[in-house]
Image (tube, rainbow, N blue to C red; front, side, top):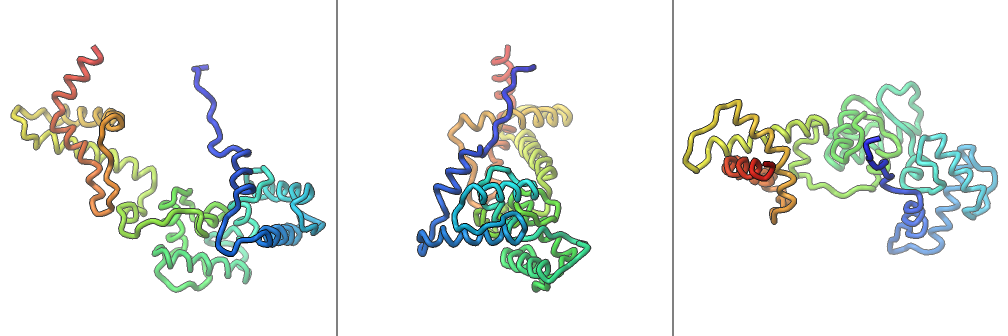
Length: 272
């Protein structure tokens, strides 16, 4: 009604086929036998779960239909493509705290989860195979770091990222220091940090002149936080990538506070 374009899928199905089927994961000992072994393993797993009857050794129509049924049953993208999420869902169970039945298989999965979290610094205790509150906290911290839903439930997406579908994060990075903050809370803290930097520039500006009243300065700072990110895109200023100076990326906001009068004057002239 408002002329807005419908949202496009970020990763369309045809791209998935190209990435996961025509471009397999390569490593030093990869060979045609590796692909065949993967197909055999896939069919055996689908048969064990009751989705496939015949082990043909080929990714035929029956295998594709079994994959589609499996994806539907596990709320995955239904496309017949066995990508990281489908593999993770095939081999790793959904685990969370206070599960009713804890089988030896689930305990093994929890122990592997705890081992990975321990190696990454999200879980301090020795792996014991019990999904306790400490394990849940480690899972939530991991999920926040890698942009997953921080619900403490280890499903296909979390398993896929745990098992390597991610970039390595520097343990000394600023992001690692604030992983306990939820994405929604971090957005508010970042907004507050930008406003504080602009206020710092306004009240400690070396440019002579009278300081504005607090409510005027606060309203000005908030308004500039909505404008500065767009201005920075057109300036030859790049945010600092060095983890040793994580706050350096907010330096332009201090400069904005210092020169707030010329900026407001320019914007007023521009809009008039």
